[in-house]
Length: 284
Ligand code: ACO
Image 1 (cartoon, rainbow, N blue to C red):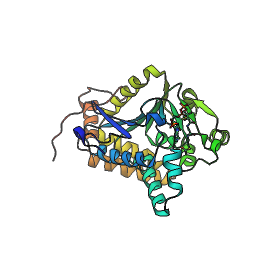
Image 2: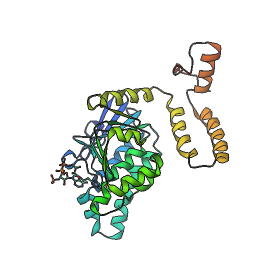
Image 3: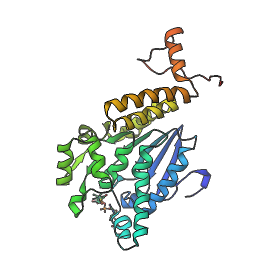
Image 4: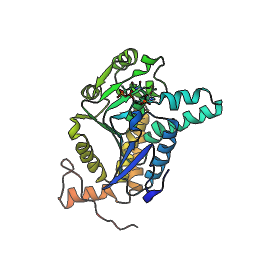
């Protein structure tokens, strides 16, 4: 971690602030952003810092250079942990898991993966655990583990089945075949596949939409989807009712009240067409 200008990261992870967006880059372009243990440590510190940094209302995760990420670092993760003590290995795996899925799944702020090139193996985990994803339509994806003699471990085999159908997941796990961004969109791995020269612009546009929502309601809505999908219908119904009430209770903007008033009484907006006007409200 460097504290130059109070910006987290600085070596294997770069952070740029831009009008409410924190662009977080894996920054090992010479190694195609392969993910080492050191990178995981820095990424953990960066995500911890950004969660309470007002300059970051939305996080975009991407890679510097030609790659989103070429997956786990075969030297700096696999070989580096082959000959260490069991405790050191456990720690390295825990640090890697932390940012790649535990933190991202439960992160307090909205996240978008912007896939700008190679995306292999372990890189599928943070890709899938971001809330949304946009890719260059010509980016290259691959579950290449089988090609060098391992199975998709970490939580890759679990993560892919949350978005891909069983036939497709099995096909790409078993063949290790590459596919492009357009195919990634068909598979449900990303929201959109756009030309390379539109990638940043479209990602920024989407980030701005998220930035301007009521952040409390947006956070609760994201969590509601993530938890409800793990529940049966009866539990989900009870949980969501409680979540709706909790959201209203904790929302400092009193969004529900504002929305009802502006639609029903003032007739100044229609929810079907856009967001209510966010106004300061008196705290009781
Ligand atoms: N681990 C360690 N080093 C890597 C990795 C990786 N995953 N990917 C790339 N590198 C390194 C290369 O060894 C090379 O290092 P060097 O310059 O010191 O020799 C450098 O990054 C550049 O890589 P090249 O292979 O020269 O780049 P090129 O653009 O020709 O190819 C490609 C890119 C296709 C991504 C290739 O590097 C590759 O196949 N990487 C491995 C991809 C992979 O299978 N990842 C999954 C790992 S398994 C897992 O994540 C669980």
